[in-house]
Length: 422
Image (tube, rainbow, N blue to C red; front, side):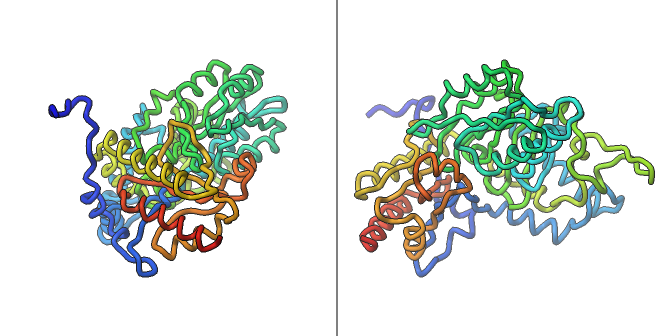
């Protein structure tokens, strides 16, 4: 055979070298090698991130933005460098539009409160609508329910088709009403794996005069995110889904939107001047970062961005697709009564399924005894479970460090568990 054209050949991923960077993967669980397939819940952390956390606490532990001594200056520099790294990673036009939060949940709550509820001119009012989709995580549902309850606005929902794709015709019809002021939707479903056409959805929402909020938690670990290309007004991300630490995330926003928004929380750090009579607020992003932040987490978030930026996303995509396709095909073919939930062609590496006569909560522990870690339950998406008529699913979600051997172990583990219960 002639050699492959380098311009079109699918790049290969050195999975063994990548796995060597993740200490947690090299352990036994119940006497079996760990096969960690719960990456949609949280990803594991490479040595670079773990070392960064240790270095901060061992060498630079000090509060940021407040001290003039060497440790404080080093900590502040590293923390603000992480903000710049994150801005570059998502192609944000200005680091002033990067607000550190405790995670994507707080980022969405910040928008739902400070923009949708408390904004003096752009806040929701009776007759307005907030448009979400049926595939949203609870963190992109409940904040909007509360915002609508407080303002008298109405929450409307775009349905999901049987294959897991978003009903784009319904999305357009909701926007055509002229009442939608905020459209909030996920880039990638954490249950179905469906990859939504974010740019198209944002464009249509903007034409209808709606502000857009995108939950990108499931997107950032699998490929580059470009907020300028997407054109969204707000983007929520979480570090722990992209090989960073827990307890830190970010809201990426257009600076002009943030400049008009009142504070979400108040206290130290988010002010420029305080008297007993009145306080003046700091400019964004610090206006929305009250109190001592998760400094170590923020700095390690920057380390995760550095590590992820050094990977070959084309190779990652090919590798994860191969794992997903093999797992989905084998499970469907080899397990009687197994039903895949979410069968759209354009998918992230997530396989959700149910097995006739066997509850998901029963399958999970049996797989765990074989060293295979999957997630069972409603995955913080109860409305989506209701949509597909199931109480829960088993979800296997893959990352760049997973292997074909782990796919084999998943399939054989499910077969063994089903045989046991039947």
